Amino acid sequence: MFEASEKNKYIIGAKQVKNAIRAGKASKVYVASDCDPEVSGPVIELAERYSLPLFYITTRKELGRMCGIDVKAACAAETL
Image (cartoon, rainbow, N blue to C red; front, top):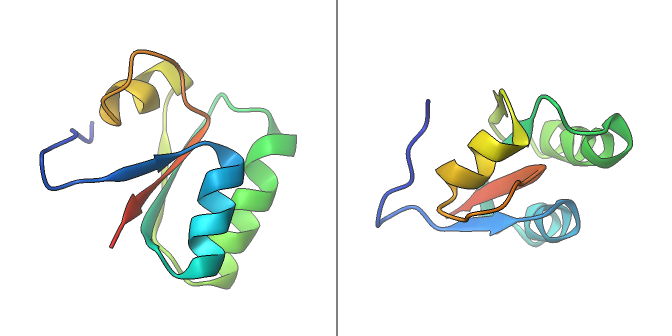
C-alpha cells in the first residue's frame, strides 16, 4: 500500500485531478478500483493521454486514507 508522507501533496477528487493533469501539475494519478467507471474513466483517459503513471488502489476508503483524509476518495493526483 502507498503511504502519505510530509513531502507528498495530493489533489483529491475527479474534477480537481482532471484540472491538475491538464495544467501539468500532476506527477502520478491514483484511482480507486471500486470507483464508478463514469467517474474514473475520464481521469484514466487523461492520465494515459498525458503519459502519467497510473496506480489503482483497492478501495476508495484506502485511497482517502493514503491521501491523509478521513473520507473516501475516488481519484487523486500527486503533485510535482
